[in-house]
Image 1: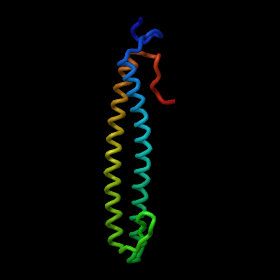
Image 2: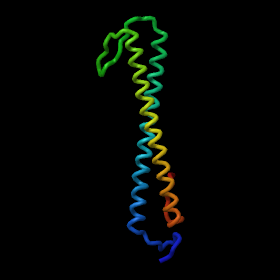
Image 3: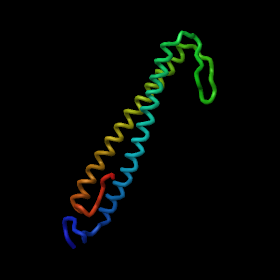
Image 4: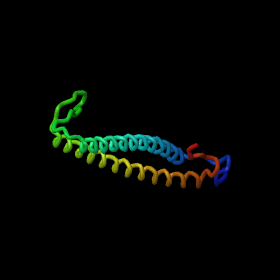
Length: 126
């Protein structure tokens, strides 16, 4: 058995667990990227709706609730949109923090796995 990542480096149970954990983290990282993209789009849409609401001079606005449009006073719509923007912003911050945590864990696992297997393992995206 050789040390240092030669072609005959033995893969221990712990190494396999680290490789599996890296794979799970990588999948979660991509899921988080997709969720962050959706949250940003939602935030942008809410911002656009808020801006359009400022420009309108109607006092009663058609507001979509589920699959139904209801006539709602402008002030109430403004409040709901602000509330939705706040919730979306908090969700976006939470997702970004989780993404940073996952990335840090992946970096640590890369150090461990590349330290043992050198060029025998590829953990990079193509």
